Image: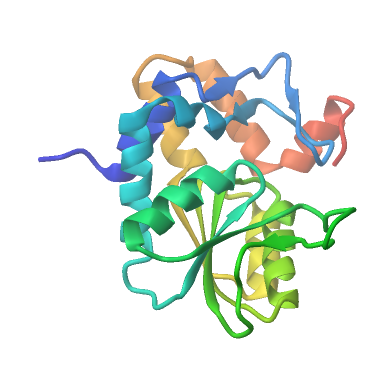
Length: 215
């Protein structure tokens, strides 16, 4: 029997060092939150077999949807969007974090007709703010966002609430829970370390504030 795709991907991310755990010396996210875990999915770009499995996962995740365009978030979502669009034989665009400050001043680059149905490809979802900003940028162009897919999501309550309010269908290939189980099972993190990670997961804002970060 083949392994569960979500667990297999979690093992992939751990094996290439895309996920780092550091409960004692936490990382600072762009939001200012301190976190004992950091996921850098850009490292998947250097591993063709893992890239293919991610593309397979995305294709399966959206197989029940009807859409016209694949959109990648700048910058980490762009290559995965390109591979998915190529797999599905669809056009692709990408969404900048802000409108370009010169030239044509575009935020969405590539051909996008008003009313186009779009799937957004993201590398990860943390607080959800950057992902929803990309969704807003596409909607401002008249597109209909039918789903957002991501390699990994922390599954934090704030992000879940934000995407629910925005009416976005979010589909992820693997999650923090699966990642932590795989890390413990493979001996990459101790039981004590896992307990600290679970404490952060239950109250990320409080955990961050206690250590001098935002929250």
